Image 1 (cartoon, protein in one colour):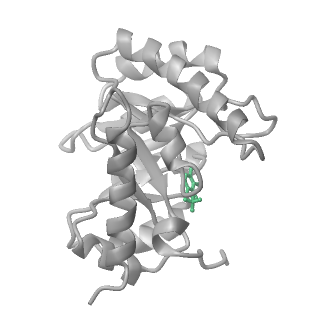
Image 2: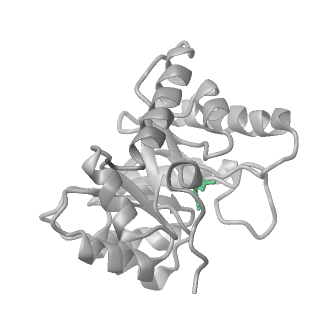
Image 3: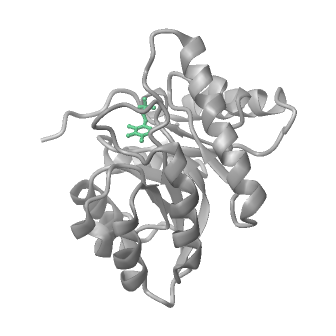
Amino acid sequence: MNSVEPVYNSIRRRIAAAAEATSANADVRLLAVSKGQSVGAIRALAALGQRAFGENYMQEARAKQDELANLALEWHLIGPLQSNKCREVAQRFDWLQSLDREKLIDPLTRHRPPERAALNVLIEVNIDDEPGKAGCAPHQVQQLAEQITAAPHLRLRGLMAIPDPHPHPGERRAAFVRLRGVFENLRSEYSSVDTLSMGMSEDFELAIAEGATMVRIGTALFGPRLPRR
Ligand SMILES: *Cc1c(COP(=O)(O)O)cnc(C)c1O
């Protein structure tokens, strides 16, 4: 008996119910955020059919990917990306959810192995305009989208954001609604755009209600994270 199974099933049911309650009623993908979780915990979820896993830190991701290389998993980088890590990201990941500046595009393009499928890219937006936080400003999305679309070996899929964890759900809802607006504009212009990644353990149902097509869930699935060393 796999102890994560009831939790996994319950989260999936909640996602499906929230998706069904929206007018879009589309499939909402679950990204299992495995940063700070053990390889054994990833294996247990993979055994239940979970394919997509999200990691934040290169060193930690590398070790897990090597150990789990025999499983057909889909890896998403969701943490901030430094330009000196672009080569490894291009070689090791299927999705990059945190592209937020032009400077990253060229090294990602150059280092993506041409025999692999294009790297799926989400533009990370600093939707609450929080100082010092990762993500581009909403008005920069358009230009980045043009540059990503023009670059070989990258495929623009949409947007990602981590709204300010406001104490009031109403403010968080407003951030999701703003992001949705930017997303709809982008989707009307680029046929490759289909993914709006927003919502985490605490607010994924609200995010789905406001149009998320992918939610990123860590602690609600796996329990508390191990502290980083
Ligand atoms: C850690 C993290 C998550 C998951 O957070 P939980 O609250 O554990 O669900 C989601 N998205 C990003 C970008 C993260 O860094």
